[in-house]
Amino acid sequence: MRVGPKVQVKQLASKRGLKLADGRERHGPLPGVTSDAVENKNRKLAERISDVVESVKASDEHGPHFILAWRMYPNKDHPRWQTEDPHACGCSCGNVAPLPGRKKKKKTSRKSTSKTTAKKKSKSTAKKSKSRKKGR
Image (tube, rainbow, N blue to C red; front, top):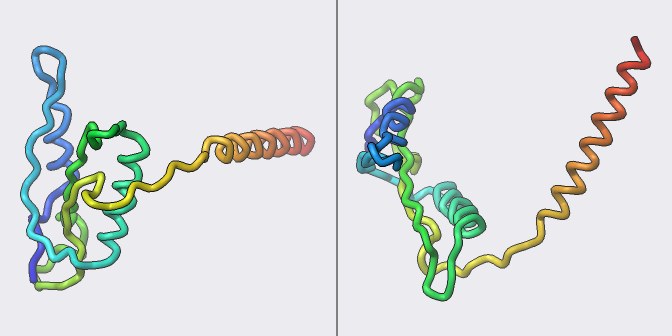
């Protein structure tokens, strides 16, 4: 079984952010994917991407304001893909987010956790800085 196309990061990067005369950006079309994406890791990836989209982009009673469509390609520059041997790894895929028909996860308050962590890090950094100065 073959997946593809094999692409390079620079190929895909060249399709994004083309400046238009009026200041907007145009993102070029992505190549279609031939996929064997039945692997559970890909389903987990789709769930995680969907979680991020739902947490960052707005939605209301009519549904999400935006839909993210994504594709995953074999990296043409990686040694793994230098052979033409067929494989069946479930590694290439594409999907949309938020995933249709799934229950929306409840938002949790993570801000307080991140502030606490940031305070701990800043205190730890300050202690290390003081100990370095004493050692000189």
